[in-house]
Length: 348
Image (tube, rainbow, N blue to C red; front, side, top):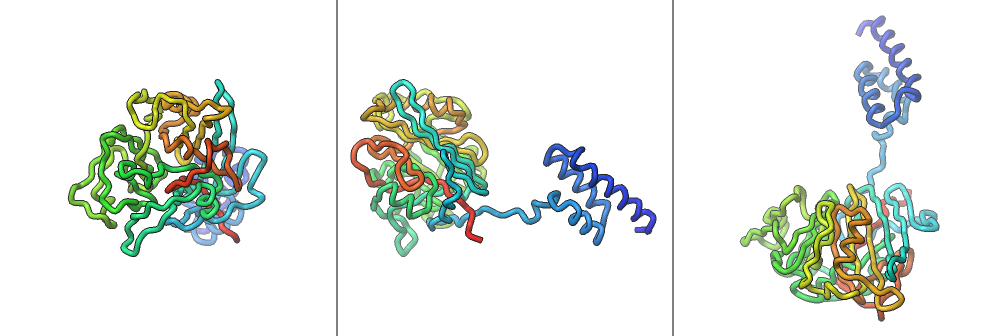
C-alpha cells in the first residue's frame, strides 16, 4: 500500500474512531464499524486501532463459561454474589420470588445463564464399572444440591421410584437405565437439547428409537426427536407437559399423579434462549395446592414457551442458598435426582 494512501486511510480511521461514541448505538453497528476499519488497515495499523479502541475488540478475550458435561460439582457460588432477592455473577442471574394468589403460595426462581452446561443434574447413585446406571439409590434434594454447589435446584422426576418413569431417561448425554430408552405411550417427555432448549412430546409422539440401538456412545445417533437438532442433554419421563410452543395445554384428566387434585407441584419452564423459570406450588397446609390445569395456566402466564410438570406431592422441593425456599409437604423425601443451575465462574 502506497504511503499517501495509507496516511489517508489512517486519518479516515481516526475520524471514525473519534465519532464512534456518538454514531454507534448498538453492538451490531459497532461490529460493522469494527470490520470496516480493520479491513482498511493491515499489520501495525490494525494493532493501533485495537490499542485506541480496546472495547471494540473485547470479544477477542471474552471469558468462556462452559462447565464439564459430567456429574462433577460446579464452581461454588460466590458469597458476594448473593443479593437480597437472588444471586448474580458474570455467568448467571437468579431472582427469587414468592407470590400468594387464590390461597396458593407460589415459589418462583427466574434464571438466566451464559451456557447450556450450567443447566445441570445430580443423581443420587453412581454409574457402575461398565458405565451403566442401574442404581435405585435416593438422597435428599438439599444434600445433592449442596454437594453439587447448586445456586438453585429443583427435584427431578424421581425416576428410580418406578420403572415406567425411567423408560426414556437421559442425563448429561447418558442414559440412566440399564436398557436402551424406549418411548412411553402413557407419559409426556421433556427433552433438553445440547443448546439448552426445551422440547415437549405428548405421550412420546414424535420420538423414535432404533430397535437395534446399543446402550453406548452411539445411542444418540439412534434417537430421532422432531424439532431436536442437537444431541439430547437431558430427558425426563414424568409430565404432563404444561405449555408447548407458547400455548397452555389442555390437561388430560386421566393422566397420572392425581391430575384433578390440589397437590403440591413442581415445574420447570423455558422463557427463551438460556432463560428459565423453576416453580413450586405449595400445598397440604396454608397453601391449598393446584391441579395440573392450574399449574399449566400459571406457567403460561409467567411467559413460558415450554413447561413441564415434575414430581410433586411430598417430593416438591426448591433449594436456594443453603436451604429450602418452599415449605415442604410433610417429611423431607429422598429422591433420585435434582435439576439445578450453577455458576461457571471459577476462582482466578
